Length: 198
Image: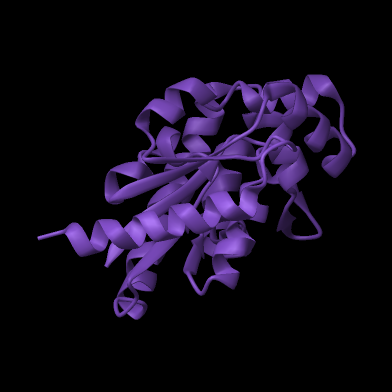
């Protein structure tokens, strides 16, 4: 099985791309979604509140908006949070892979794949690219937020050009090129990689 990664910077539209891959029958591990579920575990809540304080809790649950306000403006705080969440997501992914080992290939979808080091576990990387201005507009509309907040979040991600150099396949989601033909070509190319493998 080929372990493929699917990533893209905030606002790139990688979730849309992921849905098309699912229509093609590809099993996808949604790392960010699995990470969010961890915040409801008592042990994880205890780790987070011991670091950031119990004032982060709202009705007994981690208030992710309060947490985001801290970590997106403080690199060390973000690293501390990631040190709690990422190892647990990695273990979940390995268990998930075992359950889907009969697949030709699977996709691991994550926003900060390179930043977290997850890419080292994968065979190929698919990167979803979109111009920065378009990504900003998408996030402002999607999250009902402002440009300052979006740029703070963007600062915690590697620049697109750096990720493109490290990726095997690029899908351009720039509202100009059609994404479905690109996804179909990428799917065929990944499958061809498996055929060529020794």
